[in-house]
Length: 520
Image 1 (cartoon, rainbow, N blue to C red):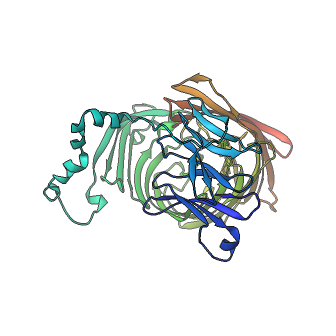
Image 2 (spheres, rainbow, N blue to C red):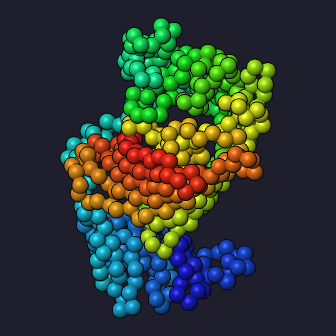
Image 3 (cartoon, one colour):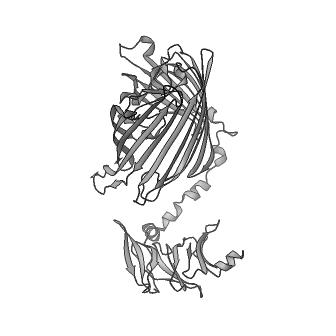
């Protein structure tokens, strides 16, 4: 779409439902009066007109199209409706920009990318068409005209190929898809086992099963067997695990493995999906038994609460944007609202947590400032471990599969030990400055190369149990470097290095160095 220099005409490319492509010109005054009639148009048949722009005098439109098999520049005269080619490119010209002297700046396609060039838009009478090898073969060997998949399929007895007719029910169509040996981590031990996946042909439902065994004699015999089974549909998932183990527990301080058994039922649905605007709703119900630490906090013992019933409702909204060439969001906002309740030993403890994140781009290219804010409250006895929220650590393992910038999470407090800070009520804010990424052209090999380095500086402050006699203030200051690699030409990997110091009031209590490799 383009507007003439005097503001009186509008041009646009239009594709009809039958794939016919048009270039059309309208008077803007007619459009404002709801008169949708073009004053000029050209039918490109099925070759789309691209990037047509007005000349300075408003007499012509210049743009590109693949009418000859390669993208050439064409000139459309609005008054007469004549379309003339003004280039005869070998590799293709794109996005013409008219200059005051009548010449055109065009982008020429090459093996090194698009190269700006200047051409004189002189109409040509004859353009050489691209030679297609397939067409040349047909000329030399006409017999290949009969080697047609469509004609072959026309002779197939389709009715005879039908195995079964009826309503498709994914859970009835589950079949064995794959199986493979696995290595998992259980706390500080290693487990060896087998995993397999069952799935229906349409990939609507799946059943993932894994079982492993820890030969570590230091573990109690009741903790050596590990099992997990999860059934997933489009919106629902149900899972059972026994002595849950996880591959990434083999690497680093963050542990997802848990002793005991869990029965989990969850539901997820996108209430709004109009990217970048997305609003997700999720609901979870879980029953845990035989635990010795909290399900979400590896360093907090359950004490007398071995059996816990947990329910949670969550809304999560995001609307963030980034400019071309950016590697992270640069402006926008996000919010989340989480209501949960834990029931144990005839006591129910409700919790409410909310978060609001927002950011804006700086005049410095691809640099932005973000604020990640969260607050939470719980109702229950303060000495009850289920009543508190817990904070501490970057949260990244040495080898990981989660978000790279984990310090943005509400539970993260770099510079402190994991789960070192507990609070029944809290208010927290993280300020982040994303510096422009440094990009690389030729660091590494085609099969393993470094794409960019992204630096960020952050500072967090948190007030716990405000208004109480034991109110405390914690802060964290640090930085993180993310090095983005590409493996075997297309698989992403990110190596992160970070440092943070943790303070209570103005006294430094601890610090933390983070090294993490996110794979795939």
